[in-house]
Length: 331
Ligand SMILES: [Zn+2]
Image (tube, rainbow, N blue to C red):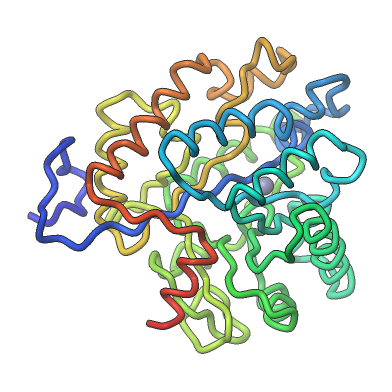
């Protein structure tokens, strides 16, 4: 039975004849304020919580990556680097330590892919400038807020010489759950700041591909790679940090084993995955809506630590997304 199936893949049960899994770990550094928008909580957080992701959660992740000897890809929101000297210093230091700093837009608009062309271009260019200044080298990769891309957005990335996009997230249960949450919010008369995104993503390839001009969720021949966020084969369950830190241990292990059987385990984490709700000053209103904020930091850290150990035990080769894009571009 192929180990890619969800039902298999106990720890240590790896076939030495199978080529080393290719694993990329990335972190979307969405500020706490983004989660206020998703859950329609109104006013952005005050005080230190505003900076909790770059100043507090990111160093915890960096420590975990150092322990495992991993160079990760950090998707930074350009605006967050402005007006936060401490956050910018941390990002610059991680760039010097060998992590890839990539773009997650300038102001994290969830409807980026639907904005007029000039506004989309301004989001890309302002983020590009802020990240290049902080990291000392310009970004070559992009991830869209809310995972949604459009033909126009991919075209703009191509024009700017970006090597890859990593936004496609063809996760069926995730998509349905998000639709349900947004519908429930509407029933209470509120509107999420996030958007559902096109259902076309559910038909997107689950492995790296060159998108088609005019149809970014289809294979084509554009000079950019699309690196989809990993889902399991068959069921297309999402294997992202937020799932791994809240899942029961047996499920986490199986999801990880399944992801390690795919062509590219593109493990997407969020900075908030290693937030500590109590000491980072996260408000009770947000904690009520984000289940991962109700899990202790120790438990979340242990889940991610074990995930990386299991990847290593399976013989994983860890590449940044930029490095993975170059490998897949060569075919
Ligand atoms: Zn984001």
